[in-house]
Amino acid sequence: MGAQDAVKDTNMARTRLNLVRTGVSVLLLLAIGATVIGWSALRRGSAETRIVLVARDMRFYLEDDGAAASPNPELRFRAGEPVTLVLKNQDSGMRHDLVIDGTKARTNLLDYGEEAEITFTPSQIPRTTEYFCTIHPRTMRGRVAITAP
Ligand SMILES: [Cu+2]
Image (cartoon, rainbow, N blue to C red):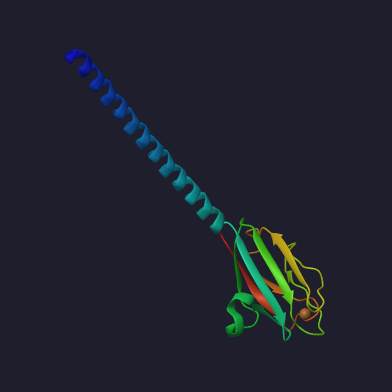
């Protein structure tokens, strides 16, 4: 009897050890999974630029900068990384658009209250260029800097 009990105890101990091992493996997999997911989220975050420009008072402004925004801000893009650019026309009675010189990036002509969203991937050349409104290119014009990837 005593020998059988000892065998049973050993089996139970092995079972417990296996359960612990399985638990450790699952935790390891979860940790690896979380790291991979976190890493790809970071990559996605860095590989996507979203810019919202507002047209008002015959100038372009970054919407995120609110009331403190300076007119016609410089836009910086990384070559090869997709950009989503939104233009909102908040200029009562005026029509505006936005074109990035030397690229295919351009919005339609927008009436007051309209907005447009364009997506493009800047190439490395030209490295510096300008964006402007085709109707008001004198007052609505800013610099675009395209940096190496
Ligand atoms: Cu305009």
